[in-house]
Image (tube, rainbow, N blue to C red; front, side):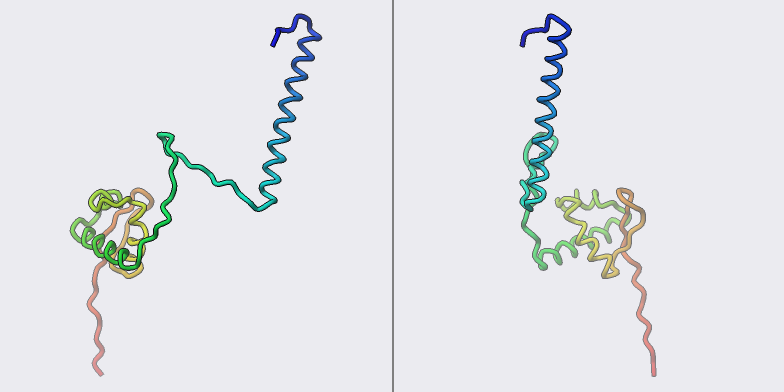
Length: 136
């Protein structure tokens, strides 16, 4: 592109660039609207910090695997009360996010209690109370 020599040439070059930019933005917006109304979506390619594509695993654990992981996690909580999910993840070799569901199951069963919020959450074995028997 030659540099403009007069103010009129500069004005014309700027006008041309602005018009071109507005046309490109309009086409991109129209494409986005068309895709959203058509109901089809392009898959989003996610990347980690190194630039490699990542994808969530579609494999789900079976109930048997979940029970085994729950038992293993419960034993860890009993052996090391007051630890965080990150500590249990390092001990089991399983990602902390993958321990979330087994931990919820243990809490729902009343075997574990938690104290704190978010990354400050600590896990303890629940206090087992003796069952009351009623003699009739």
